Image: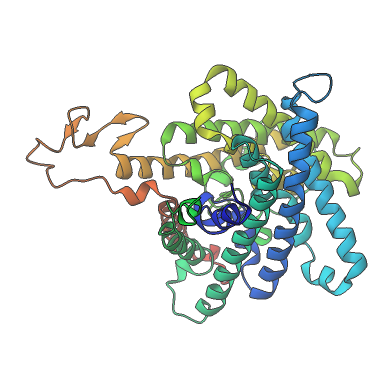
Length: 201
Length: 235
């Protein structure tokens, strides 16, 4: 599939948060203010964009009969999560070196990316859908971008809704769930659109 | 919100009774006032997408209970030997190993369910409730108490999951756990095309779509916090 098509599909039509509920924990935790949401959103794009091709290489050349034809697929989950954890560690060190101010503002959220389901989910979708290397880069960047969009949108709405008169039991978390549901309905209208068909390929 | 709501970790002496009052609370608390989903807001990630039907949700719940309990036990036994810097990776490897076990057991005994759940079995690894309990409880408590805590949190998680799944499957498809109860043809227990009493009924397809799960959980949170105003956090 075309790079751009898959990117758009991953970002909008199959949005990680709104269509699959992936990465909900960090999504709810960082969406209190737009500033932190932007920081974590960018980090997610970056980590997804890096780990998907690395995991693709590992899966294709190492696990799937790469070493003397052995089927090592049972190690897939462990290796994937190890790659993600070490990549996050690496990103953390690089950011700390290059921009200490960004590092301080991200704080605890950087290690949180390791347990962001969207990252591992991307790699697992890649295996079940049998993407090739370029597809997996497109899917990683697109999925990350979709996550970024969703988290910024909800953070902006939550900043505004704090000044509204919401029933006490729904304040905070309840409202965040309702809003995510409504955003999900909005994104459902994109479902079934096939970018490949639109470009006539 | 997640940090404030988790139980405060108190290092206790070895319990005199293996199953005293404190131990019972470890199991009952997560079912109510310290529920993993509605209060701690952990672990919503991986499993809401599977709640369109009851059977996959029950399978996921059992898997989470198993992984949560045993990873708690293993980490609790290792807790004095793990260096602080690498504890995340150690925890993740333990969880990933257990999830791999679950994946292969499921593949062997119930291939249909395995296919249906596809990536969501693997995503149990990143289920924050498991990591959260390891960090907040197992790193500071003995194995038996950690085991109970794992069981309790798994149950609290599963209870919400199955409740959501029952609502979604019944209103969305007119069935519960595959038993067809109400619908438009003769396969169903109540056939709405012939019954004069239920002729108006039509399944609400919205419940099959992801947003419905969000609405159902929002309502659950609303109800719980209306009766327990002290749980409300304004953020």
